[in-house]
Image (cartoon, rainbow, N blue to C red; front, top):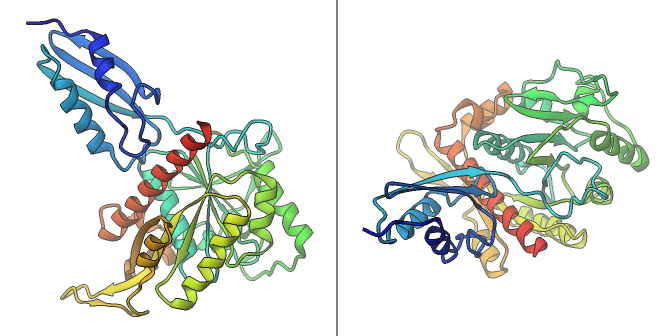
Length: 355
């Protein structure tokens, strides 16, 4: 029987395309180790994100290809991950040097569940193994302290005179809501808002993070413009509901992202329908949406849909995101799949810029 060599295995890996990045694993520098012993091949592949949506396919494709090499008796494909930094966040332009990717979540109007989506995407990424931080950029109406059970927490300075983020189930969190009383109102003009956001970026000890998820306020106003001026944003997610008026507003948000040269990672359709828990009947409370078809026709990526579900609302009110409270629920699985799709698209965007 022919003795298997590392060169043979590497040659095979040069023929297999990563299903999303569309380049071979060797060219992508994803092959971190190949070991061969008595016909058993162990290949260590480093994915570009722990939230990779194609893990099972990648493992199966590589194992099947290596098995075809004469002399191979057994194949063990081990998947590791290291999130690649957005090339837009160059050291000379990055006010938050430990952060690899900045993802903003926005909408053209309020009331579409944008904060719920932002929070659960952040915690889904953390659940999948990424290092994640969450910034509440809604200065006038911060809601994250309530949604994360942090209403009584206060921000403090560390030894380096930088703000120490609050911790919520393994995710670092910063919100204006933790610098004011719950009944207080922020009555600021644009320059003061700009300064607050700058401090939340520059004067916070973010540490090493794969993703900083930023929950934008509704609309297309000062906050998004200020953020785009302060830091290069890696990608954006737009959230809408099925109504025509909501989608008309989210189109404006997508136009804003385009004008600010922020890559649109995709659209999330929230509150898409209600399913009765007893007999599983589907009710389209806001009307049956044609948004997905419109997105496809406009070549706009669709990340997924989230139905109305009482436990999700209750979890937010109780300060425990649904992905944390019940990771195996159908609703949580939807958020996790959306997070995977988003992370995959961000990896593709990072690669395209680098090449």
